Length: 248
Image 1: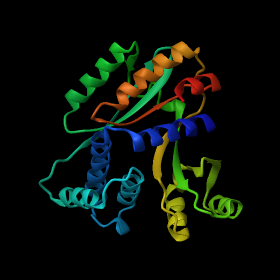
Image 2 (image 1 turned 180 degrees about the horizontal axis):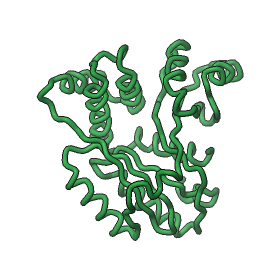
Image 3 (image 1 turned 30 degrees about the vertical axis):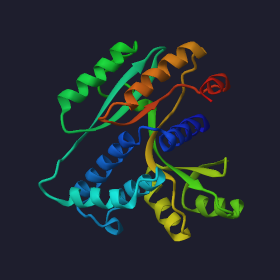
Image 4 (image 1 turned 120 degrees about the horizontal axis):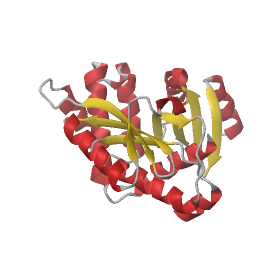
Protein backbone atom coordinates (compact mmCIF):
# COMPACT_ATOMS: atom_id res chain seq x y z
CA UNK A 1 0.00 0.00 0.00
CA UNK A 2 2.92 2.33 0.65
CA UNK A 3 3.76 2.45 -3.05
CA UNK A 4 0.23 3.50 -3.95
CA UNK A 5 0.23 6.21 -1.29
CA UNK A 6 3.50 7.51 -2.72
CA UNK A 7 1.92 7.75 -6.17
CA UNK A 8 -1.14 9.49 -4.66
CA UNK A 9 1.09 12.10 -3.06
CA UNK A 10 3.02 12.62 -6.31
CA UNK A 11 -0.27 13.26 -8.10
CA UNK A 12 -1.45 15.56 -5.33
CA UNK A 13 1.74 17.64 -5.40
CA UNK A 14 1.68 17.71 -9.18
CA UNK A 15 -1.91 18.95 -9.17
CA UNK A 16 -1.07 21.72 -6.72
CA UNK A 17 1.91 22.90 -8.79
CA UNK A 18 0.58 22.22 -12.27
CA UNK A 19 0.36 25.23 -14.59
CA UNK A 20 -2.89 23.90 -16.08
CA UNK A 21 -4.83 24.90 -13.01
CA UNK A 22 -8.05 25.47 -14.95
CA UNK A 23 -8.22 21.76 -15.87
CA UNK A 24 -7.78 20.75 -12.23
CA UNK A 25 -10.46 23.20 -11.13
CA UNK A 26 -12.78 21.89 -13.84
CA UNK A 27 -12.56 18.37 -12.43
CA UNK A 28 -13.28 19.63 -8.92
CA UNK A 29 -16.26 21.68 -10.12
CA UNK A 30 -17.68 18.46 -11.59
CA UNK A 31 -17.20 16.79 -8.20
CA UNK A 32 -19.03 19.66 -6.50
CA UNK A 33 -21.85 19.56 -9.07
CA UNK A 34 -22.42 15.82 -8.66
CA UNK A 35 -22.18 16.14 -4.88
CA UNK A 36 -24.87 18.83 -4.74
CA UNK A 37 -27.24 17.10 -7.15
CA UNK A 38 -26.83 13.60 -5.70
CA UNK A 39 -26.55 14.70 -2.07
CA UNK A 40 -29.73 16.75 -2.35
CA UNK A 41 -28.34 19.71 -0.41
CA UNK A 42 -26.02 22.64 -1.16
CA UNK A 43 -25.16 22.79 2.55
CA UNK A 44 -21.98 20.81 3.31
CA UNK A 45 -23.17 20.33 6.90
CA UNK A 46 -25.86 17.99 5.55
CA UNK A 47 -23.97 16.63 2.54
CA UNK A 48 -20.85 14.52 3.33
CA UNK A 49 -19.88 14.15 -0.33
CA UNK A 50 -19.98 17.93 -0.76
CA UNK A 51 -17.79 18.35 2.33
CA UNK A 52 -15.25 16.03 0.73
CA UNK A 53 -15.37 17.94 -2.59
CA UNK A 54 -14.89 21.26 -0.80
CA UNK A 55 -11.94 19.85 1.17
CA UNK A 56 -10.28 18.74 -2.06
CA UNK A 57 -10.96 22.13 -3.64
CA UNK A 58 -9.22 23.85 -0.74
CA UNK A 59 -6.38 21.34 -1.01
CA UNK A 60 -5.48 22.68 -4.48
CA UNK A 61 -6.06 26.30 -3.40
CA UNK A 62 -9.27 26.87 -5.33
CA UNK A 63 -10.52 30.37 -4.40
CA UNK A 64 -13.46 30.48 -2.01
CA UNK A 65 -15.55 32.45 -4.51
CA UNK A 66 -15.03 29.72 -7.14
CA UNK A 67 -16.27 27.08 -4.70
CA UNK A 68 -19.31 29.12 -3.73
CA UNK A 69 -20.12 29.87 -7.39
CA UNK A 70 -19.92 26.17 -8.27
CA UNK A 71 -22.27 25.24 -5.43
CA UNK A 72 -24.75 27.94 -6.41
CA UNK A 73 -24.73 26.88 -10.05
CA UNK A 74 -25.17 23.21 -9.16
CA UNK A 75 -28.15 24.13 -6.97
CA UNK A 76 -30.02 25.42 -10.04
CA UNK A 77 -32.34 22.58 -11.25
CA UNK A 78 -31.71 23.63 -14.86
CA UNK A 79 -27.92 23.43 -14.59
CA UNK A 80 -25.84 20.81 -16.38
CA UNK A 81 -26.17 17.27 -15.00
CA UNK A 82 -23.35 14.76 -15.30
CA UNK A 83 -23.18 10.99 -15.61
CA UNK A 84 -20.61 9.04 -13.60
CA UNK A 85 -19.17 6.04 -15.41
CA UNK A 86 -16.13 3.76 -15.22
CA UNK A 87 -13.86 2.02 -17.72
CA UNK A 88 -11.30 -0.74 -17.34
CA UNK A 89 -8.30 -1.79 -19.37
CA UNK A 90 -4.64 -2.71 -19.53
CA UNK A 91 -1.52 -0.63 -20.09
CA UNK A 92 1.60 -2.03 -21.80
CA UNK A 93 3.06 -4.89 -19.75
CA UNK A 94 -0.33 -6.00 -18.47
CA UNK A 95 -0.77 -3.23 -15.89
CA UNK A 96 -4.42 -3.08 -14.79
CA UNK A 97 -6.14 0.30 -15.20
CA UNK A 98 -9.44 1.44 -13.62
CA UNK A 99 -10.83 4.81 -14.74
CA UNK A 100 -13.55 6.93 -13.14
CA UNK A 101 -15.23 9.51 -15.39
CA UNK A 102 -17.82 12.26 -15.03
CA UNK A 103 -19.31 13.30 -18.35
CA UNK A 104 -22.20 14.92 -20.18
CA UNK A 105 -21.58 12.83 -23.32
CA UNK A 106 -20.91 9.10 -22.95
CA UNK A 107 -20.16 8.59 -26.67
CA UNK A 108 -17.42 11.22 -26.61
CA UNK A 109 -15.93 9.85 -23.42
CA UNK A 110 -15.65 6.21 -24.48
CA UNK A 111 -14.29 7.28 -27.87
CA UNK A 112 -11.57 9.36 -26.22
CA UNK A 113 -10.67 6.63 -23.72
CA UNK A 114 -10.43 3.98 -26.45
CA UNK A 115 -8.25 6.28 -28.57
CA UNK A 116 -5.82 6.86 -25.69
CA UNK A 117 -5.47 3.13 -25.04
CA UNK A 118 -4.91 2.41 -28.72
CA UNK A 119 -2.37 5.19 -29.21
CA UNK A 120 -0.35 4.24 -26.11
CA UNK A 121 -0.23 0.50 -26.71
CA UNK A 122 -2.89 -0.48 -24.20
CA UNK A 123 -6.31 -2.10 -24.54
CA UNK A 124 -9.77 -1.25 -23.29
CA UNK A 125 -11.38 -4.21 -21.49
CA UNK A 126 -14.88 -5.33 -20.60
CA UNK A 127 -16.53 -4.09 -17.41
CA UNK A 128 -15.47 -6.23 -14.46
CA UNK A 129 -12.18 -7.32 -16.04
CA UNK A 130 -9.93 -5.53 -13.54
CA UNK A 131 -12.24 -4.08 -10.85
CA UNK A 132 -11.72 -7.15 -8.63
CA UNK A 133 -7.98 -6.38 -8.55
CA UNK A 134 -8.64 -3.27 -6.43
CA UNK A 135 -10.26 -2.54 -3.09
CA UNK A 136 -11.83 0.79 -2.14
CA UNK A 137 -10.12 2.73 0.63
CA UNK A 138 -10.31 6.24 2.06
CA UNK A 139 -7.07 8.20 1.64
CA UNK A 140 -6.53 11.38 3.67
CA UNK A 141 -3.50 13.65 3.28
CA UNK A 142 -3.11 15.82 6.37
CA UNK A 143 -0.85 18.80 7.05
CA UNK A 144 1.34 18.52 10.13
CA UNK A 145 1.54 21.84 11.94
CA UNK A 146 3.31 21.11 15.19
CA UNK A 147 0.96 18.35 16.38
CA UNK A 148 2.14 15.59 18.68
CA UNK A 149 2.39 12.90 15.99
CA UNK A 150 2.16 9.94 18.37
CA UNK A 151 -0.93 11.35 20.06
CA UNK A 152 -2.51 12.18 16.69
CA UNK A 153 -1.82 8.66 15.41
CA UNK A 154 -3.64 7.19 18.44
CA UNK A 155 -6.65 9.42 17.75
CA UNK A 156 -6.72 8.37 14.10
CA UNK A 157 -6.32 4.66 14.88
CA UNK A 158 -9.32 5.01 17.17
CA UNK A 159 -11.24 6.40 14.16
CA UNK A 160 -10.35 3.40 11.98
CA UNK A 161 -6.95 4.24 10.49
CA UNK A 162 -5.45 1.10 8.90
CA UNK A 163 -2.17 2.65 7.74
CA UNK A 164 -0.37 5.90 8.59
CA UNK A 165 2.67 7.33 6.81
CA UNK A 166 4.55 10.53 7.71
CA UNK A 167 6.74 12.25 5.15
CA UNK A 168 7.62 15.84 4.19
CA UNK A 169 5.53 17.32 7.01
CA UNK A 170 2.45 15.47 5.77
CA UNK A 171 0.56 12.48 7.09
CA UNK A 172 -1.17 10.03 4.75
CA UNK A 173 -3.93 8.07 6.46
CA UNK A 174 -5.65 5.04 4.95
CA UNK A 175 -9.03 3.80 6.21
CA UNK A 176 -11.48 1.15 5.09
CA UNK A 177 -14.28 2.28 2.80
CA UNK A 178 -16.84 1.89 5.59
CA UNK A 179 -14.80 4.09 7.97
CA UNK A 180 -14.43 7.06 5.61
CA UNK A 181 -17.23 9.08 7.23
CA UNK A 182 -16.00 8.22 10.72
CA UNK A 183 -12.55 9.57 9.87
CA UNK A 184 -14.04 12.74 8.40
CA UNK A 185 -15.91 13.33 11.65
CA UNK A 186 -12.79 12.66 13.73
CA UNK A 187 -10.74 15.17 11.72
CA UNK A 188 -13.50 17.77 12.04
CA UNK A 189 -13.56 17.20 15.81
CA UNK A 190 -9.77 17.63 15.94
CA UNK A 191 -9.97 20.80 13.83
CA UNK A 192 -7.78 19.35 11.07
CA UNK A 193 -8.50 20.39 7.48
CA UNK A 194 -7.21 17.67 5.10
CA UNK A 195 -5.21 18.68 2.06
CA UNK A 196 -6.99 15.85 0.27
CA UNK A 197 -9.74 13.40 1.22
CA UNK A 198 -10.75 10.80 -1.35
CA UNK A 199 -12.16 7.35 -1.87
CA UNK A 200 -9.53 5.56 -3.95
CA UNK A 201 -9.07 2.09 -5.42
CA UNK A 202 -6.01 0.40 -3.97
CA UNK A 203 -4.44 -2.52 -5.88
CA UNK A 204 -4.51 -5.83 -4.01
CA UNK A 205 -1.35 -6.96 -5.85
CA UNK A 206 1.07 -5.02 -8.03
CA UNK A 207 2.74 -5.70 -11.37
CA UNK A 208 6.51 -5.13 -11.59
CA UNK A 209 7.95 -4.09 -14.95
CA UNK A 210 11.37 -3.05 -16.26
CA UNK A 211 11.73 0.71 -16.04
CA UNK A 212 11.36 1.34 -19.78
CA UNK A 213 8.06 -0.58 -19.89
CA UNK A 214 6.87 0.98 -16.64
CA UNK A 215 7.44 4.47 -18.06
CA UNK A 216 5.30 3.57 -21.10
CA UNK A 217 2.53 2.43 -18.77
CA UNK A 218 2.77 5.69 -16.81
CA UNK A 219 2.58 7.69 -20.06
CA UNK A 220 -0.75 6.01 -20.80
CA UNK A 221 -1.95 6.68 -17.25
CA UNK A 222 -1.03 10.37 -17.47
CA UNK A 223 -2.69 10.69 -20.90
CA UNK A 224 -5.89 9.34 -19.38
CA UNK A 225 -5.62 11.72 -16.42
CA UNK A 226 -5.32 14.64 -18.83
CA UNK A 227 -8.67 13.88 -20.49
CA UNK A 228 -11.35 16.38 -19.48
CA UNK A 229 -13.92 13.68 -18.68
CA UNK A 230 -11.60 11.61 -16.47
CA UNK A 231 -11.78 12.25 -12.75
CA UNK A 232 -9.39 9.56 -11.49
CA UNK A 233 -7.16 6.75 -12.78
CA UNK A 234 -6.03 3.79 -10.68
CA UNK A 235 -3.40 1.20 -11.58
CA UNK A 236 -1.49 -1.73 -10.12
CA UNK A 237 1.98 -0.86 -11.43
CA UNK A 238 4.65 -1.46 -8.78
CA UNK A 239 6.54 1.75 -8.12
CA UNK A 240 10.07 0.46 -7.61
CA UNK A 241 12.85 2.67 -6.24
CA UNK A 242 14.44 2.66 -9.68
CA UNK A 243 11.22 3.87 -11.29
CA UNK A 244 10.68 6.51 -8.60
CA UNK A 245 14.19 7.84 -9.25
CA UNK A 246 13.21 8.41 -12.89
CA UNK A 247 10.05 10.27 -11.85
CA UNK A 248 11.67 12.63 -9.32
